[in-house]
Length: 193
Image (cartoon, rainbow, N blue to C red):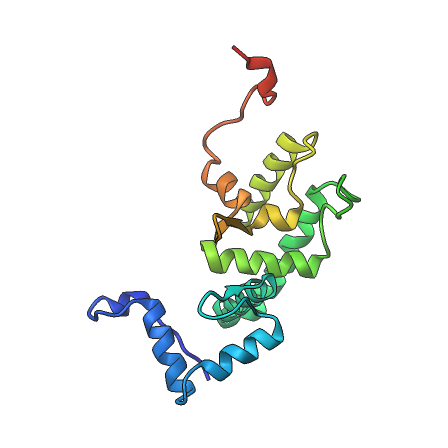
């Protein structure tokens, strides 16, 4: 069963997207969502107790994966090859080995490819060349920085801020600021006034 909800279709109603999703839930489970909520708690997707449930990291990763796969399924055959090729290229750009925290700078190609699909689903498609250039600039500017993000988190990550999940993408930042020019002095400590 496929559902595609375009938010522009809600303009002529008094409903918000989240309200439509709740109505859809009741449509799928006429007795109410309580059994579904309990199943999600049991599977580890929801944490806490009602009504203050929070999404687990497992839930966020699963939802991101489902959205990415759903968004790209129309062009799946071509996009799989494209994302795998792009993932290999980005992995070549990134440092080899592990960072000081013991994590690999770049995970496997299939993990990077999936992350790129999720990026496109969240932030829209960008030319491969812009993605490659942004990654090269980021690595050049941060290669001596112990706070440089792994490739997975450079592409995007969700951070918790004041109890809310916020998306963050250094890749998107570098793509959107590609024309800003290169910073000439990267060491802020030399400009103390």
